[in-house]
Length: 425
Image 1 (cartoon, rainbow, N blue to C red):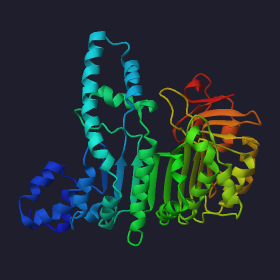
Image 2 (cartoon, rainbow, N blue to C red):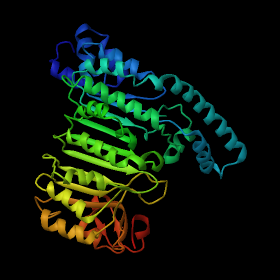
Image 3 (cartoon, rainbow, N blue to C red):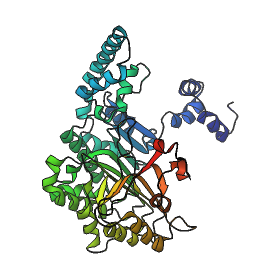
Image 4 (cartoon, helix red, strand yellow):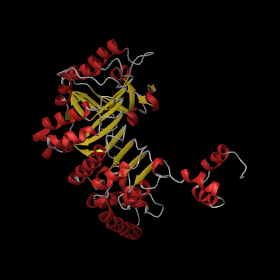
């Protein structure tokens, strides 16, 4: 084994389980040095109930391990205990009462343990100074993901009920102020290292919309973290009470941040809330000076209200670069409910929009732009209404009455199964 070329030995190490990798590294110095780089996967994942930021700081200070980290995934998921307890009842209402009570005790005892750890570690997990120092020592870091929607209970000893209630969106807590502060700390740390750090992928799956309602000095710092982005995915949580009074300013600041990302190739913007969000201020801010993202290839909009003309104008300005457009999406839907991430047209019609896009894009043709529709789609003025579980080619979608939708947008007329997949009204 010692005489094998390093290339063959690396091929062996790549396929070894972690425990076997640790053992083979102890057999000799050469195996120890070769196996060192395989101890860490390129993506570092944090959980709210673990001191993972401290672990990451230790990795960043190690000359051999620090270059291995290319992506950091911050899981900040927390349980809304009030909703979680109600949801656990609905999962167990057919159980024998004694068994139900036993599982409830085990589950919420385990939750109390996790909550105690979360209260200890999560508040300091995004300390700005600590993150600034960590990012400064991770030379190959290119991707940051922040999640509040992924279940944090992933260890085998977690009670099944605690993990199962996470499928209900109402179980997932959104501490608005803390979430804004953590995202600000992360992006400020990126901005502080902008001379040496090149973050090209950024995503957040539940960012309060008011994050972009900050003073101009803070927005200037935050926006500098966008300058190298090629992929941006933002799902923003819109709450009427804090957001209605300053939505125009917030959209203006969001536009400023997006404009500082001239290299964007993949953009996904989504909103969730009690209603669809009117994005007229955002699209108007780009229309004023006909601003375009020169490299934009893939685009998705979800959970919005717009007009046929505004959406058409935005898409046509990018027709030279766009290859794939999805209007609408699954959204954040309740269990066994239809998708709610669609788009409403306040003025105009879907058939008119798709027809005009077909003339400009030659949509879904060879070398043309692929345009798909998904979710709950409405023409508020035209009276059109569809619900698509999965992405459907735009021309087929607006011509549909009743049909079934299969993966990858393949469609087959099937009246009997239509209720399981798509509806047209």
